[in-house]
Length: 553
Image 1 (tube, rainbow, N blue to C red):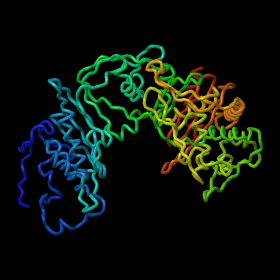
Image 2: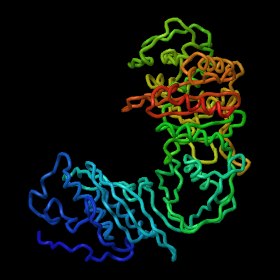
Image 3: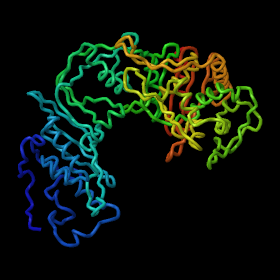
Image 4: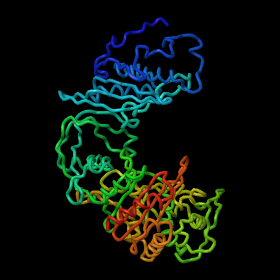
């Protein structure tokens, strides 16, 4: 209670912690002289009530303001220990805030809080990046969230690395120095330069190309402030990210398989929707011709891990045809409901097909026509089909940049039944589902690639076996029927006759609308896309895919 309040700016920070002390900014919530006091009581209060009463209930505006201000004031003044103590993970906060000055060489930090929304407080950051006699200004926005500590209810900043810089994931750090990896100049298949300014979706792709080929392409490294990825981010196959370049390196050159016209069209198409992603392939070679995402911070097209819904029925049908459990024209009704291992499965809109063929059920994407085969299958059948014929789920694709090559885990009971329709534990992205359609079109799996293996002599993934000509013919028959008369007919109108397609809708917990999927081929071109929380694939992803197939000729 006896602690004296200090006038703003009088206390001097220890040298070399943050890199200097800046006058506090009075704006919005304001960093003020009472920053380290809680609700009008001194931080050193020692009453029994203060020690033993556990606060509960929603945070008040005053509590949010006080906790946020305590953290931001201490960070700005260079008091790392005090700033870390204002969070719910002091060790992690101490390490990152110390590195902000020591490793990132960021100095002269000014933090300006904005208007809180509930427990979330936005703030702006201004600092100077100074390294070996060269400096650059840095400005960005971030935010923090205040929570109650479980033990005593004290309001504290919910610590995540993204509080310090939004591109950071927990475990990542900020580092300034020689990049270690020279920059690259990426070229499309026609020799034109590929830039994020021209193709916004390709920012993460360019990061991946630099990481993979920077040292091999003949360039020299520059000096930069970058996000150095930690173990968790590396497991997620995220590349380091450059934030500020102090001195340019000399780029090496990497040629990609991207088609400039298709890439531009893909960017335009996904730009019309939120949460949309699309990939275009050439099935005869495996070359990736385009990839685009509505949101640019994460490449869902290559690295997404989403339930693919009924597009997975292509793989399921391959298995059923190979096992001779069904043929396209065999009579096969689709009941309205089907019970398996205590679950009751429904079709979309509770539809049913009382008298029809398997081809009719495939074209209508009727779930229970597939799930009712579950009792005739072993737990590993779908997993083996995906791996052995489609090259999925082996974690061995080498496309030239980080990618996820799908997952079809061995499951049992109702989860195994759900996997047959692309739910359960099955996870894919547009690259994977484009590859599935490409395998049907060409009759064999060819691992997709963005950079030719001739560039670095890497080994591409292969499948253990090739589907028979009969199975390929059956798959093309049901996919053509879907494009002619089924759920894909509206989107694919006018693109025939050498085509095939499959739609998908994947339910996601907490979403009002399913993720809409669509994969299709036309001639020597394949495209697959997803619109998350968009609705049925034929209405959402379908027009994107069909447009690209049309543009690709």
